[in-house]
Length: 539
Image 1: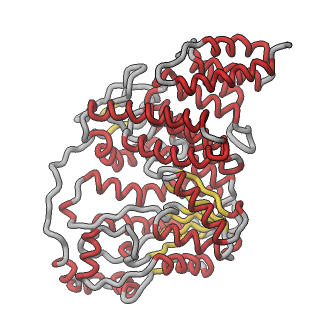
Image 2: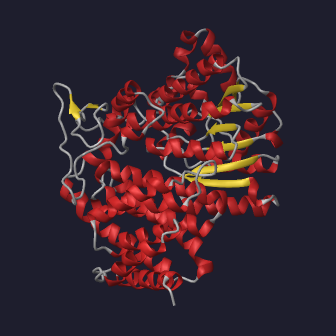
Image 3: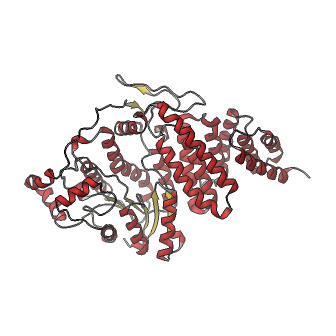
């Protein structure tokens, strides 16, 4: 496959290996969509690739997403499909080094999810599109340790053996299609990925290390030559072949590696999370099997403090109920790290403070920052909002405000990137509604309704005026005198050529009392209301 024909969706694009791969791909003529967690970092990376490579801006796109949220995978796949991606490179991953007995269940579940389950689910979501391409590739960047087990890497190797097995099996499954599945196995690489303990281990065992550009060049060769697998380095590449033929012959070769491990530190006592039946309908109490706990649904207008999974299972149209149950077993334990290990009272108050700070920062940028500065400042604020959401999983308020900030960034950005951001915001609002749609007086319904009437409809985007009306009216029912629901429903009526019906809602919004602590936002909103009334009122 010619590199110049590649439109590459690259996960983990901001990491050490990911950054090098993005740079080499762009230099070789590929178009790249960078994905990672931080909008600010991705935007800066994209600008640098365009500037330093001297390439057209449309050759480098970016999309901020969190692969640890299952609900983020479908929007990412939709954006990649619309961009006409024909190469999917799984570069995201997390390390895991140490004696097996020192790992707690949550850490093991997190490693297995991000290193294995997430690539599988994203591939599944993109496969229908990839099958329609004249040529398409799925490349799993794994590790030599996906073929060669070493002391200290039992958990990491389990995830990478699984990834390589997935790539091998899927390659054979789709061999009669235009999609080719490949596996790239780097050896130890000089990045921040390695912990201090892993670095000491590498020094003690005299493990050779490559730089990130060696891996990037290997990715280019893999794409060009169409090899099924490529393992990097000597003697590692030879060792994986010997290990495949006669693994027991190598069992005695790693005494130095065993002795180089840090002393064993046992993890805390295991506290298993409940196994939840994901087939329960949205809004119902989660059905529990014998021996498990049943979290109660959160009360209206209250913080959702019940320990929950950090995603809404019902919002996964590409997963069958059976697959949701299988995924739950691996992921519910991981969610305990985020939600179950702190007392609920310790989580709630910081969330309130953090959300209030996001509100203040947003209104300062939206209504006080000079127009040329807004895009960059919203990028930075989106990164901050994402950290707040990640620090308070299972709570809808941070998700709503992350969505509002990402939506505002979309409005400033424009173009294809704006549509991708709008879909990201949509997923955030839907996740908040799945937890507790009544939170913040129904702001998620209101904000999602705004997206549905502002985003173009099919075949360009997901816009739907009827859906917008339904959501906006739901928000009005929850906060009938609020400034925002009345303003946005009035704006919707103007957008849909009903200006006479809009006037009462806009006037009600204008008369709404100022919200405590929201003086800047309310003053800015009233200016928008007056401007819209001036346009539609007869003079």
